[in-house]
Amino acid sequence: MKIQINHVTKHFGSLTVLSDITFDVRQGEFLTIAGPGGCGKSTLLDLISGLLKPSGGEILLDGAPVSGAGFAHGVVLQQHALFPWRTALGNVEFALEATSVPRGERAGLARHYLGLVGLGALDDRYPHELTAGTRQRVAIARSLAYDPGVLLMDEPFAALDTRTRSSLREDLLSVWEKTGKTIVLATRSLDEAAYLGRRVAILTSSPGRVLSLHDTLRDTVSLREAAVSLA
Image 1 (cartoon, one colour):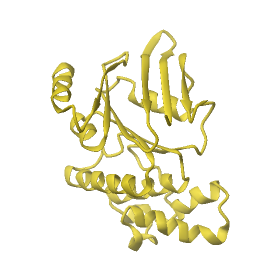
Image 2 (cartoon, helix red, strand yellow):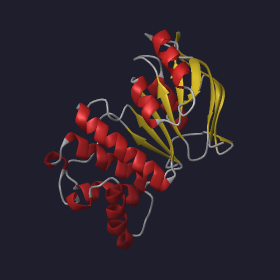
Image 3 (spheres, one colour):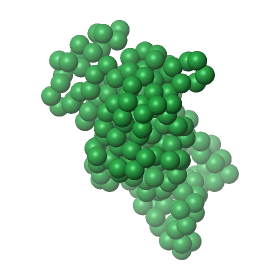
Image 4 (cartoon, helix red, strand yellow):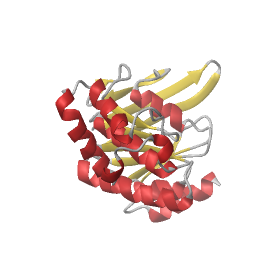
């Protein structure tokens, strides 16, 4: 297993955000986490990334406890967080600089990652010259450039219009198929979770607990039942 989450609980003071979370993520799997706002999806991603520590239980990455944030995880958020003074190419090169890729190799590698998300012709544009969807594509390319073992995505398409969101979903599935990366994506949309994920973990409202875990290729009926229970 790539990620093992064993009986994880998270408290912030007297507030319990997550309670007894247990599930695994397989190597190369695209797993989605679905649940209402405030159920702890973002907190769970922060725990997987090592930005936060569990109050109880453990999280293992490749069989070893997650001990802190690092380049083992790439993170894509709702907001792209690109550097406005860098071009699309420069933003992706930043990840390569951070991981000590030799200077002479950076531009070529950055163009490779931009090409994966369909942006080979826009590498000289600055963020303010790009659409919201294109900026998010650059953010995905930058995260891939860290060559992480796991790509964590926290509602990455929530701020986009319907057409752009649909296009980016297709691009993300293409990237996953080409790279074989392990991807964990959190979303409030059960439809999005079922479309993207090969398995879906559904969380209850706060405190977040695993209501159910579904194989999207087989569990259409049980996914519908879960949607009704969350409504």
